[in-house]
Amino acid sequence: MSDRELPKRGSGRPDRWERRPNRGPGQTGKAGDGARGGARQGDGPKRSGSSKPPGGGPRNEQRGADKAGAARRAAHETIVRVLRDGAFADRALHGAAADLDQRERGQAKRLAFGAIQRRLTLDTIIDERVDRELDVEIRAALQIGVYELLFSDGTPKRAAVASAVELAKPNLGFKLVNAVLRQVAEQSDAIKLPSDETPEGAAIRHSHPLWLVRRWWTWLGPNVTRALLAAGNRPTDLVLRANGLRAEEGVEIPGEPFDPAIPEARKVDGPLDVLGDPAWHEGRYVAMSYGSMCAARAVDPQPGERILDMCAAPGGKTTHLADLMHGEGTIVALEKHSGRARALRRTCTRVGADNVEVVHADALEYEFEPGSFDRVLLDAPCSGLGTLASHPDLRWRIQEGDLRELEKLQARLLAVARRAVKPGGRIVYSVCTLNPGEELQPEGEIRRLLPHRDRTDGFYISAAGG
Image (cartoon, rainbow, N blue to C red):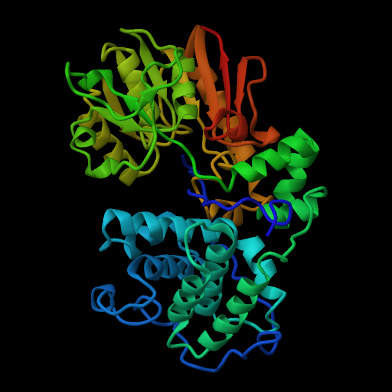
């Protein structure tokens, strides 16, 4: 298969979208009788109502003789839960891969997140070869199989087919999986996807919703849109922030500095088990995107000042502000959700951000003295369209109709920020999205980060005053 015929092989991996609609990605399928030119899907056992992982019993009973492998089994379970239950991909994977070692978890994540990101492309290929409705377990097995055959290096074609067939069992549709994937394997060099010269073709080729492709196409133009779409399917860089509040001479922080303007930023090449690293537990560093660091840096907080962080969790920017202030002064960190507020307190304790006062409150309802803060950070709830590479299911979860409500909420929060800041004080408005309707405070110093150009999440940052 030539580079022109399909996007270059590689894996996509899934900082937040705080107001996700209570909606799961819709299942995909096409009605019909079976595989075109192959076997028919049987009427074997359905597993949609089962509480066990797809394809057999509990994971600890499967590991010994599982021909599909533990990592593929976890990836399959993750995709089934996303398709059938509307589960969030990261949470589903966390449960499915809980018993795996680090290497297996990495493989499960690569397969699950890659297949979820590439869903539209994969389903286009599948539906050209199947003319009936598919059980969700069968579609998930096919998606993993096609993904491994066309987008994932290192797996022999025969192994990819055989493993996907095992994932489909005991559903008799495994015969259809075998027929379809053998056909894809044999035709892989000849499979062609639509050109990305039009929004319609680009949506299928790069696996993004058509409404989003059209929006970017009109706003940013075809070339930038195509670059953004490609970046949305590539792995993101692992970036850490060295924490000065826990700095200790002789303690090495993983990664290498890469931006003199943000010397605390470190880019890590190669694998790193962050949660298994004692240095992380000791608060020596925080894993956060470069774009998030740019937003915190834009606030330019000074020691001794009083800062308001209006939407603080999960706390990367909050604790970065505390570090930049050398722990001197006060940061009032508001968080609407009680669980996230508790987690934020734990994060502040871990990294030594003792000058942060976490308040469980909605920023729209929090009572404060007008003009009582030197600086305000409004890292607003947003559509998250700049984070599609790190959140594989977000592109299918958010709908165009959701954007207007988010834009209204952001405007209301910005009005609160303007009341909170003292005359001449500084307001930083930031969103990790790429949507012109969410780009507020145009009078400020504006910085827009683009994933394909800046190797980080897409961000809009506006700093006004101060």
